Length: 146
Image 1 (tube, rainbow, N blue to C red):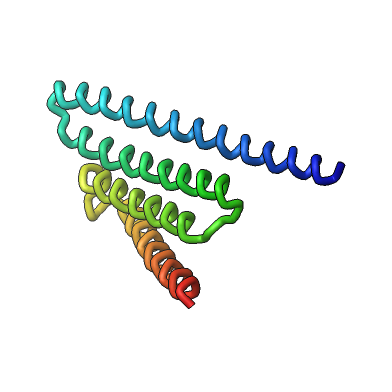
Image 2: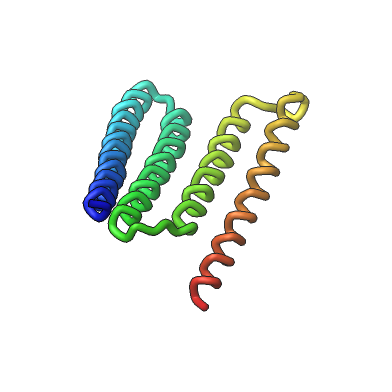
Protein backbone atom coordinates (compact mmCIF):
# COMPACT_ATOMS: atom_id res chain seq x y z
CA UNK A 1 0.00 0.00 0.00
CA UNK A 2 2.77 2.44 0.95
CA UNK A 3 4.69 1.50 -2.16
CA UNK A 4 1.65 2.21 -4.37
CA UNK A 5 1.06 5.58 -2.75
CA UNK A 6 4.74 6.46 -3.20
CA UNK A 7 4.60 5.43 -6.86
CA UNK A 8 1.47 7.56 -7.44
CA UNK A 9 3.23 10.57 -5.92
CA UNK A 10 6.32 9.97 -8.07
CA UNK A 11 4.22 9.79 -11.23
CA UNK A 12 2.30 12.91 -10.17
CA UNK A 13 5.54 14.79 -9.63
CA UNK A 14 6.83 13.76 -13.06
CA UNK A 15 3.56 14.81 -14.71
CA UNK A 16 3.74 18.21 -13.01
CA UNK A 17 7.31 18.76 -14.21
CA UNK A 18 6.48 17.64 -17.74
CA UNK A 19 3.38 19.86 -17.87
CA UNK A 20 5.43 22.81 -16.64
CA UNK A 21 7.98 21.96 -19.33
CA UNK A 22 5.31 22.01 -22.05
CA UNK A 23 4.08 25.39 -20.80
CA UNK A 24 7.62 26.80 -20.81
CA UNK A 25 8.23 25.45 -24.32
CA UNK A 26 4.96 26.96 -25.55
CA UNK A 27 5.81 30.27 -23.88
CA UNK A 28 9.24 30.32 -25.53
CA UNK A 29 7.70 29.55 -28.92
CA UNK A 30 5.14 32.34 -28.54
CA UNK A 31 7.87 34.70 -27.35
CA UNK A 32 10.07 33.99 -30.35
CA UNK A 33 7.17 34.18 -32.81
CA UNK A 34 5.95 37.50 -31.40
CA UNK A 35 9.53 38.80 -31.48
CA UNK A 36 9.77 37.89 -35.15
CA UNK A 37 6.45 39.56 -36.01
CA UNK A 38 7.26 42.66 -33.99
CA UNK A 39 10.78 42.79 -35.43
CA UNK A 40 9.49 42.71 -39.00
CA UNK A 41 7.01 45.48 -38.15
CA UNK A 42 9.78 47.67 -36.69
CA UNK A 43 12.02 46.95 -39.67
CA UNK A 44 9.27 48.08 -42.04
CA UNK A 45 8.96 51.30 -40.03
CA UNK A 46 12.73 51.81 -40.18
CA UNK A 47 13.22 51.61 -36.42
CA UNK A 48 16.41 49.53 -36.47
CA UNK A 49 17.47 50.36 -32.91
CA UNK A 50 14.20 49.02 -31.54
CA UNK A 51 14.61 45.81 -33.55
CA UNK A 52 18.11 45.23 -32.20
CA UNK A 53 17.08 45.90 -28.60
CA UNK A 54 13.98 43.70 -28.78
CA UNK A 55 15.89 40.85 -30.44
CA UNK A 56 18.64 41.02 -27.85
CA UNK A 57 16.22 41.10 -24.94
CA UNK A 58 13.79 38.45 -26.10
CA UNK A 59 16.24 35.98 -27.58
CA UNK A 60 18.19 35.94 -24.32
CA UNK A 61 14.90 35.47 -22.45
CA UNK A 62 14.12 32.53 -24.73
CA UNK A 63 17.55 31.07 -23.92
CA UNK A 64 16.73 31.37 -20.22
CA UNK A 65 13.46 29.52 -20.80
CA UNK A 66 15.33 26.83 -22.74
CA UNK A 67 17.76 26.38 -19.85
CA UNK A 68 14.86 26.12 -17.39
CA UNK A 69 13.22 23.54 -19.67
CA UNK A 70 16.47 21.57 -19.81
CA UNK A 71 16.64 21.60 -16.02
CA UNK A 72 13.04 20.43 -15.68
CA UNK A 73 13.51 17.60 -18.16
CA UNK A 74 16.72 16.47 -16.52
CA UNK A 75 15.04 16.49 -13.11
CA UNK A 76 12.07 14.52 -14.48
CA UNK A 77 14.45 11.89 -15.90
CA UNK A 78 17.02 11.62 -13.13
CA UNK A 79 15.18 12.89 -10.06
CA UNK A 80 18.08 15.08 -8.94
CA UNK A 81 18.79 18.77 -9.27
CA UNK A 82 22.16 20.24 -10.14
CA UNK A 83 23.33 23.74 -9.37
CA UNK A 84 25.00 24.41 -12.74
CA UNK A 85 21.84 24.98 -14.83
CA UNK A 86 20.57 27.51 -12.28
CA UNK A 87 23.91 29.31 -12.35
CA UNK A 88 23.72 29.41 -16.16
CA UNK A 89 20.20 30.87 -15.96
CA UNK A 90 21.46 33.50 -13.51
CA UNK A 91 24.39 34.36 -15.78
CA UNK A 92 22.16 34.71 -18.83
CA UNK A 93 19.71 36.86 -16.84
CA UNK A 94 22.44 39.16 -15.53
CA UNK A 95 24.13 39.51 -18.90
CA UNK A 96 20.75 40.10 -20.55
CA UNK A 97 20.00 42.91 -18.11
CA UNK A 98 23.46 44.44 -18.59
CA UNK A 99 23.08 44.46 -22.36
CA UNK A 100 19.56 45.86 -22.29
CA UNK A 101 20.46 48.54 -19.72
CA UNK A 102 23.48 49.56 -21.76
CA UNK A 103 21.49 49.75 -24.99
CA UNK A 104 18.73 51.79 -23.32
CA UNK A 105 21.20 54.08 -21.53
CA UNK A 106 22.88 55.06 -24.78
CA UNK A 107 19.62 56.43 -26.12
CA UNK A 108 18.09 58.00 -23.00
CA UNK A 109 20.80 59.27 -20.68
CA UNK A 110 23.48 61.87 -20.74
CA UNK A 111 26.18 62.39 -18.13
CA UNK A 112 24.31 65.31 -16.52
CA UNK A 113 21.20 63.19 -15.84
CA UNK A 114 20.99 62.07 -12.16
CA UNK A 115 19.33 58.83 -13.23
CA UNK A 116 22.55 57.95 -15.03
CA UNK A 117 24.24 57.29 -11.65
CA UNK A 118 21.49 54.80 -10.78
CA UNK A 119 22.10 52.99 -14.06
CA UNK A 120 25.83 52.92 -13.38
CA UNK A 121 25.22 51.51 -9.88
CA UNK A 122 22.95 48.80 -11.30
CA UNK A 123 25.53 47.94 -13.96
CA UNK A 124 28.20 47.69 -11.28
CA UNK A 125 26.10 45.35 -9.14
CA UNK A 126 25.17 43.23 -12.15
CA UNK A 127 28.84 42.97 -13.10
CA UNK A 128 29.69 41.77 -9.60
CA UNK A 129 26.87 39.25 -9.84
CA UNK A 130 28.24 37.91 -13.14
CA UNK A 131 31.68 37.47 -11.56
CA UNK A 132 30.16 35.76 -8.49
CA UNK A 133 28.06 33.39 -10.61
CA UNK A 134 31.03 32.54 -12.84
CA UNK A 135 33.14 31.77 -9.76
CA UNK A 136 30.33 29.65 -8.35
CA UNK A 137 30.14 27.70 -11.62
CA UNK A 138 33.87 27.10 -11.50
CA UNK A 139 33.65 25.89 -7.90
CA UNK A 140 30.73 23.58 -8.65
CA UNK A 141 32.52 22.09 -11.64
CA UNK A 142 35.77 21.60 -9.74
CA UNK A 143 33.85 19.87 -6.91
CA UNK A 144 32.09 17.62 -9.42
CA UNK A 145 35.42 16.68 -10.97
CA UNK A 146 36.82 15.33 -7.70
